[in-house]
Image (tube, rainbow, N blue to C red; front, side, top):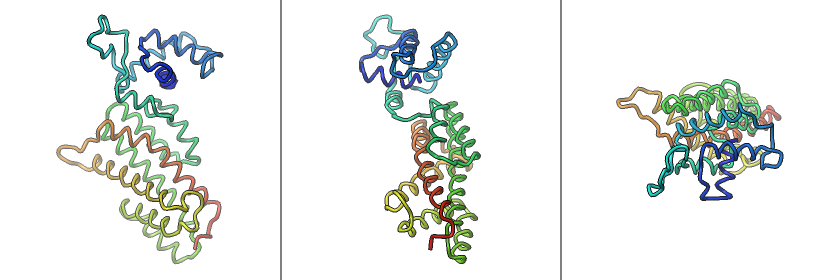
Length: 267
């Protein structure tokens, strides 16, 4: 909610000057019955939570203490400045990893039926990202991606009508190394898009999924295989992967639900 308030405040006043008490008061009004996002009454526990969240956002490089204008006298704490990275985060129209509860709620809402194991890996990916453990975050997000690809492969297998094709697909998509398994799934989608529905019937959807799957997998492999020095993903790379992951899951589970509704029909 604090990120939503900052988005609104900076949109309405680009020169909005942050102070910790001003944030608390502004957020109280934001969620009041007459505010932009009316909700539960704002109490003393909520005030403490805002202060704790501000320090989380400082740790996450969204905010920094003090003003970034050296010509301002007494511009230290309790003033705050939104970083360039923070402006990108606040501009996002969807929940971001700095809001774990909102991010996970959005993920479950748009990727209906997401495998609980994949969701658990995503939770770990967010937690390790916020702790600046980018190697661990890349490995966890890669594991989540692999789990949902297995989900999709199983649905494709059940949707195939010809027994010999089912066996061949199963051998290639559910066994062996992950790169070949992903290529088998995306290759099948390309070849059968004339029998698929929605955006999966076009060329772009499978190409985007293919690129994202290999991007996530390569970061997972670079992070998870011993190297000297370790191939540590940057903060920005890890953030970007987490931001696009919900849409990636949504598209995959849209196809999975469609295939589950018509088993044994794809020739």
